[in-house]
Length: 265
Image 1 (tube, helix red, strand yellow):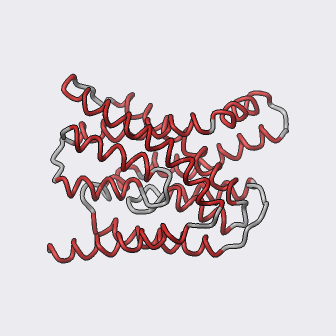
Image 2 (cartoon, helix red, strand yellow):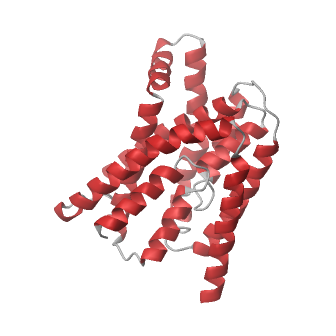
């Protein structure tokens, strides 16, 4: 990996983590285009660093909400903040379960599975299209909604299924206010990212070497800055019901990925 690739991959991760176009799918496509032959451990380290950067950008954008979540969680009072904290925890359960018991199965879908990415992007396209047609409401996230959105997040582990696209779309289709849906979608993934990073560090899967510091730093910075921009942009997009544009984009990229894969066989 060189610095140019690190910058491009950092920007892709930062933008696509929040925009509903699948960050994992785009990273897989980008690595395939670059002919990436990075060792698995180095590739995992780089991916973890990029996700850490976007998680930090989420914390910066929603810093006031994050403070309220922690206050509510440790007050142990049945108020709005405490209930919201519980909903975040409930939404994490499906993804945690999938990560603990089906990690090997999900990892098998990564590593150049561009055909799968193409089909999953088309599914993401359909989800966004349906959500864009849904009526606007002022409904809050309920405990049941949190569980359903959590299942959507777990399914989005598959490359090509946009996490933000799946969670925001399912929220909107459940009748939840669009801005509240986007906020919940972005906040619910932060504990999972930090949990995954902690798990990888504890297991020894991540190895930092001096030769990696340069492109890891560049990738982190570009991903963080792009994440700040994309997070704020996505909230405005969802509020204005402009998901159909991303639906069309995902469909086109999905078709191209499928076509190229079938042509090269």
